Length: 201
Image (cartoon, rainbow, N blue to C red; front, side, top):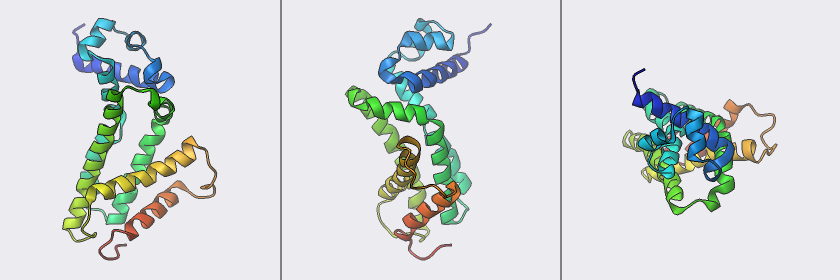
C-alpha cells in the first residue's frame, strides 16, 4: 500500500488528541502515540520531530480556529446579534467536545515548560485576532462604536468560556432551568449593549 503522508498525519493527530485528553501532555509518551496511531516512532518523528511541536499541532487542529475561519463568511450577512449567537454557540460546542483535553491542560499547566505555554498563548491570540476581523468589519459598517476589536473579541470569547468553565468544569448549578440557546442569547445581549453604535435587533 502506498504511503500517504496526509493520512498518516491525521492518524497521529487523532491518536495524540485522545491520549493527551486522557493522560495530559506530561503523561503521554511519543511511543504511546505511535502505537495508538499504528505507526513506528520513527515515522512519528518524521512528521513531528519534537513533542511540543506535535502538541502545538494538536491544539491548533482541535481548537475553534479552523471552524471560526470557515464560520465568519457564513455569518457575514446575518444581523449582528444573530451572528454573535451563532459564533458563541459553535465556540461552546467546540469547548464541550474538547472538555477532557481542556480539563487536563488546566490541571497540569503550571508544570509545562515555557515553550508549551507560548503555544497555548499563540493559539488563543490567533483565535482572538480572527474574531477581531469580524468586529473590525462591524465597526467599518457603523454598527458598533470605534474601539479595540481585539479587546472586543477577547471579552466575547471570555464570556462564553466563563460560562463553559462554570457549568462544565466547576459543575456550578447557577444556570439550572435555562436552555442553552437562551443563555447564549443573554450573554450576547449583555455584551452587545456595551459596544453598539445604535440599537440592533
